[in-house]
Length: 186
Image (cartoon, rainbow, N blue to C red; front, side, top):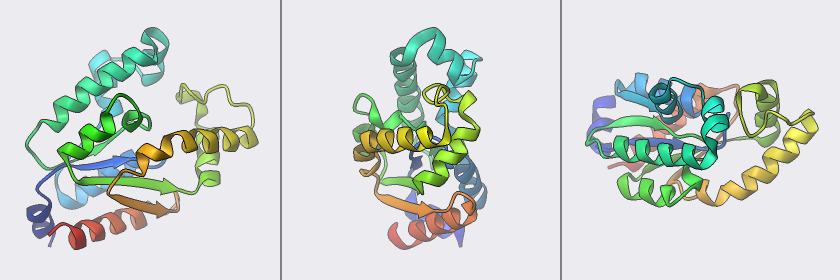
C-alpha cells in the first residue's frame, strides 16, 4: 500500500509549523511508516556546527543562523529523492524560504496544534528554545505564542495541507498525513 503512495508523490514531504508543534516526532513516524529517509533541519545545523541551536543563536546571532539554515535547506531540497523534512519553526518565515520550498515540492504540511496546549508544552521546555527562554509564566507564554504565531501564520498557511491535531495524539496526525498523501497525490 505505501509503495503506491511513494509512486504517487515522488517528491519530498515538508513539515512546517510553530516550534514544539511535533514536526520532528511526526516526521520520524511518517518516514518510518513510508520507509523513507527523515531529515530534521535543526539537527543538520547542530551537527554541522557541533553546537545546539541555542548556542549558535548566542554566538553567531539569528541572521547568521538563518543564512546557514537557508544554505542547508537548498542543499537538501536539491536532492532528487523522496524524504521527510522537518523544518525549524522560523524557516518558512525568512528570506524567500517558503516560496523556494513551494517551488521544490507540493507536499508541504502545516502541523497546527491548539495554542494553549502548545504553549504549556513550550513553557515546560523553554530553556532549550532561545526565543522563549525568558518567558516567566504560562500565561505570558500563551500571549507570546499567540502573538508570534500571528506574525508567522501567513507563511505557515501557504502550506498545501493543514493538519489540526491534539499534541497528545501524534498518531492521529500521522494517519491524517498518510491519508492526505494517499488521496491527494495521484
